[in-house]
Length: 252
Image 1 (tube, rainbow, N blue to C red):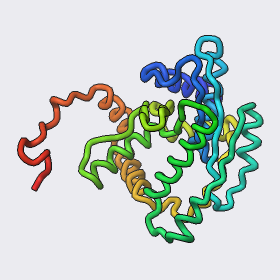
Image 2: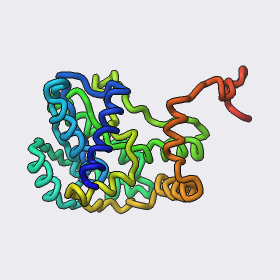
Image 3: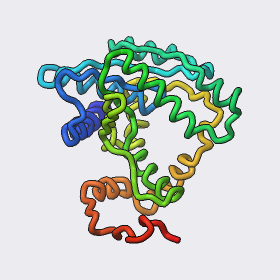
Image 4: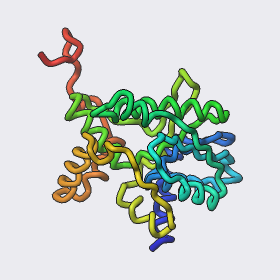
């Protein structure tokens, strides 16, 4: 089972990298690792991909962890990176202090994401790398779509590949074809560690609400995630309404 699942997931990662041209020879790729299940699994599979295509698509791989100052034990992450022979940079930040001690944010997720994004990109630039691999999987794609629809009235989700012209960095998401269920199954089979998330807001977010909504939908429509993925590839703008002419598409 372990070998079959690992092969399937590596195939999905390879397919995503090929479909969206995520990695090119000579790239210097940082994997942003929180220590959680998704990012650690991404690091594991990116390492497998790198070794498989070492001659055809040679690239560097490095792990970066942002220490939020919340007291997380990083020993399992350090040991994991050492096992994979991947260098790890731990960047100390005061993000946790800013959010919970200084600003006392009751809904910190948006600000936290912005602060973490800025700290990660700065660290990647300091290291001299040009791409950042993020562990957003298919469930995240679907959840982001529903969050944009339900809370902002917009049909959108994130892209598998995004170029940031202000920093000259490219964000890549090699996990967009992989489901969260696959990640959960992979963890014990390949002895991938998971660091406890000490954030006080963990599991108390709008995203968690949407995750539960999709889980409920999946009970009635088990293939909802794969159908969503198919719709993303088969999207035709002609199937949606055009913008209204006089008020920039806003309903009033």
